[in-house]
Image (cartoon, rainbow, N blue to C red):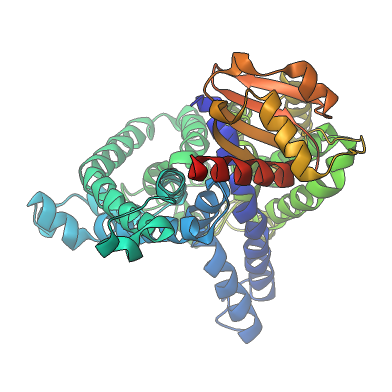
Length: 486
């Protein structure tokens, strides 16, 4: 399958769990605002909000495992979501348990490096959640109709999917036991190497911090620069006042202009680039994500909204983040965060002993807001990037019933024999065909299709409007009935 086409499907599947994340970020922000010193210890209400928010934000992997599996499954069946969760649970129990790793590798826990121990704790991340969601969905689409011998008939069909996903997760876990700590340790060594480069090192850290988020390996660099793996401890030393004035804080300050200004401006650009008929839909999601980023510094709802559907924008975002950290470190404009680079932490750190001209980060933030907006809007429109809301909506009134139109679409797409898989997003049929050249584009247009997007020689998207999911389901039902009858 075309990689870009599949990444767009993953991006679409992520929109359901992404819509939940702002709620967690806002709960945390409100909790910290109510009790800025005790973070819940001094207020029952703050405790509820903080731990309620952590319940969402600390379990993103589980949301992504279920959401991606559900979204990529042919018929959005709950068995796929259950399989994704089950697979992630196995990864957590194997790769996330240092004692299990010790037994598998034969290396005593006492002889493991600190990086190896931390790598085990970071094994369950957004990356592993998305990975297991994809694996579960692929297996569901392959085996959800499987027929087993009569004696094993109970375990056939959709019940077979969690079973085969479990064994796949075991294989992935064994691979990760050997690969994950090695990669993690290499990134730690890389972080140590650039930690002596001053402002340039801060910029390099900022770039890779964002670039590695999709695979969950940004934590390796965080352990070097903002935590205590090699003694830098940028966060704790900044807030305790035990660090060095003009040095401590350089790995935090540059995030404020990006999280509180740049990415919210990117949301505005994506909203303005959305089709007029889709703005109401995406406005709520992007608006909530922007407010969450400004107040709390939680940016995952924004970043996951475009990292898969428009990877080039995500690379630009990583470059701009690195530039922001470099500028702040070079100019010695310092503020710090305990949770993330949002308004709450900015205000709380404003008058700390190691804060230096933190008000200049506001100026830098406004400049970065303008840069993000201009760059995102230009790139989206110039390259027709499929950010949220860029889908077209059919304005025509169709006269044929959905079932009849589905049959007509099947015929125009080369017949049932040409269909390999059928899926849909809000306004598009997402299809895998045996031969794209067999389609009849003129007939598709006559049926009301607003456009046809070819992704390689087997993948096709047909823009049909808001009835896309209904048409896709009707096509799938007829296709499966024909297969069963043959």
